[in-house]
Image (cartoon, helix red, strand yellow):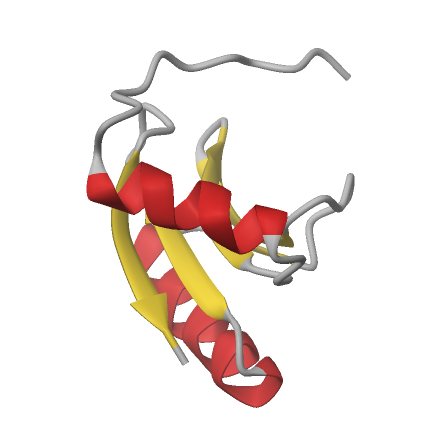
Amino acid sequence: MKKILYKTNQNNPTIKAYKEAIEKGMQNHHVLPRGDEWIVKKAGSSRASQVFSTQKEAANYGKLVAQNNGTALFIHRSDGKIRERKDY
């Protein structure tokens, strides 16, 4: 699987918070685009936990998973950049 690297603004507060969470070992969840689909994926995992046809469906499922696990949820835009972060 080819890894896609995105250019990000490293001074963005959301990006900084994400990096801090990773350093502290927090297991976050992400809503990411994959082709015409949206996936919910645990940070560091190579596989999607669930696949959806819309971002809204994926975000709703991601919210439930993050709430149950007490983690943060990162919702990405269709270009892969982080749009929103929600802590649970």
